[in-house]
Length: 340
Image 1: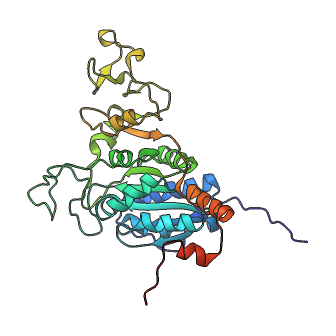
Image 2: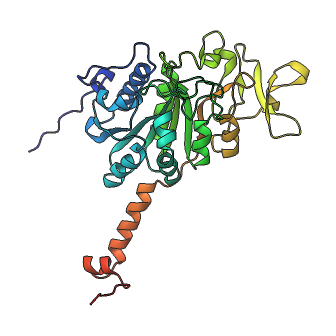
Image 3: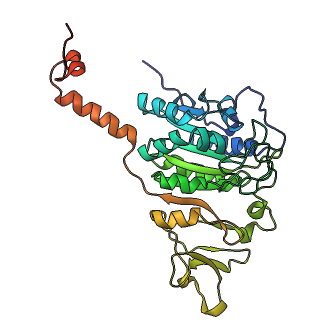
């Protein structure tokens, strides 16, 4: 008789490895690693069924530090390799870790297709608006005017907004959090994990060496309450230190504006209500930027659809049931010819 051993209760430390964690002191990646290990513990994720796939960059050291299976791949190609892992074994729980340079520059094409295909992955994009590993060049998300070794007189490129990109590519789950918001980040990661299909999570991550404080306009403690909008499905878009500010459509337009509750007769009934299944609303929320509008955090969009691997394996199963002949017939098909 085979005895069934009880499953141990895995703590966050059980998802750590014996590797020395090596990022710059104060790097936001430490906080993200802590949040991911806490998330895995809360989920009691089986370590032998969990895989972390990364590309190239500071964020991509992640697989070395998580006590699961991992694959440190090549620059920008992590989405393609993660897709292969998931298609080969759909039972694996696959997490993809990338940065704003790795995932949106050289890897932008692969990111687009993994999102539109809706492969069942958790995609974590660490956004520090700079290339950290290669010493501080401007990245696709760097703001106009960013001075760097590659833009010494200031970047003239408009910044790419990762969540807008993801929504435009057809992503069915899009969310945002901040490296220092541990409780919020863990909850967002668990929401992403619960979604079946491609889950895209942008995490604002501070690079203390090459872009320190770039997000202070909405993450600094003294401004955060008035510069962050925390989203809850079905609830009005209210924010502010005194919960007295809100977001509504500017009368007669399709643009958003900040209003103060109680002024000029404005009440919560005048505010937009968050609907996480509304893609146009999610696009507007993704585009909000301080100081004119608060930064939207939490789940912007969540509207599941059949996952790519489910449909691929569904086709395989159907073909097995209906196909006639053997392997030779399947390979040669009807359109073949011989060369004498």
